[in-house]
Length: 546
Image 1 (spheres, one colour):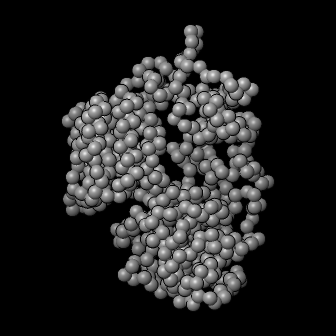
Image 2 (cartoon, rainbow, N blue to C red; image 1 turned 180 degrees about the horizontal axis):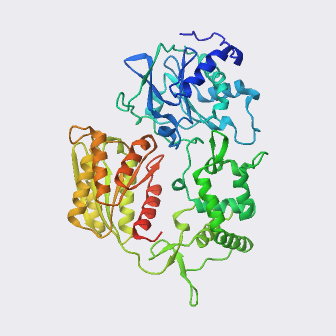
Image 3 (cartoon, rainbow, N blue to C red; image 1 turned 180 degrees about the vertical axis):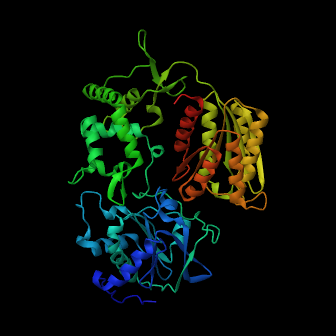
């Protein structure tokens, strides 16, 4: 170990040249390895077994960018851990040290997105984006898991990996300044098969301000983003130009920086449009008339802010438009929705709120039969189980749909509410839903399929709400494979399926949804507003009204 209080050796690139070449070769394989004595760097997940604290295991099948941030391509995110004596390291001190060490090495102006914006930190105190407030990462299990190392994730193109030794040295300096010793890594062991060593990600999920996550069209309202961009840029053509040019060579306006990670993503060749950015570009190009109509309405509203909005419309109108709440509807009216948001919040209508939505009234939409599967394991206790219950109540009160509710925990699956429209029956069933125990997901999927086949609903949708992955098996294959097999059976029988889960479990849940032929929504946390929005979107899809 390196004793605290000693002045750390300043790292200069020439002194690290030989080691750096070997490290870059390791990263490209993508094995990775040690960087100095206390740091381990790779593009995969790695961690320490408490029984062998001097050994670091790298899990080659699990790419760090794909698992932590849901990125499409492998090898984009560099995962670096710097190990130290157990203790607390202030992430703000680490951030200052890294900024000072990199100095003039950054290629972009300070007012534009830089490489520093694409670095995440986590210590035993907290973390977040290096250039952010660093007040995130406060989940207790997450902080405990980082008491013996500083974690960094860097979305840097390979052309900038030469700077990684400077980053590692800067972090080591911050650790030593905190009065802690560095801990030497004796061995780095690689595991090449998925089943060699399971990697439990449950302690690591938490809310963050990271810019590294790859934005996808389902992660945000693309139409809302397109309208916002056109309004701020002064028109559809100017917004399209911005997306085509990628912001140009100059510094970006401050208003754009907050949503830059949604529109653009750092790739091997630098900043590129994200998939969400591509979707916004398509909307601006193909639905420009609708965007312009909404902009004209916003400008009229700005001239007469006291004007009141109409109701369902009067005689002679081509279509009847009105609020979503409590009204039979056919589809969303985008222009009227943003006009309503602008009336309520003239200085910033985004993001949209439930009361903003205006819909077109044509006829009663067909009703659905919801089979809601709620994970009632111990980790769902508290606000997570409450959010799931709030969703059930919301559907029961605001729709004409029938609802069935089942929970799964330990080795049991319990049907709390059979298919019904009766609000009292729903409330009574929810009272008995209390979290405890393990997660028998395979059994839950089997029971849901059996129930659907027996009840024969006309438009069923199985909605799974979970915060983890299976921990109880039905047979000899293990809990993960058992649940995948049951999901595949849902897909073969063409039973509509939607899963809502958390970011740390994205990789497994993506495969589960794919096997079932269904949809997956990944959230930073289970919140009722997010669940309401997902239910509305999936309801429109199954009804055929989207």
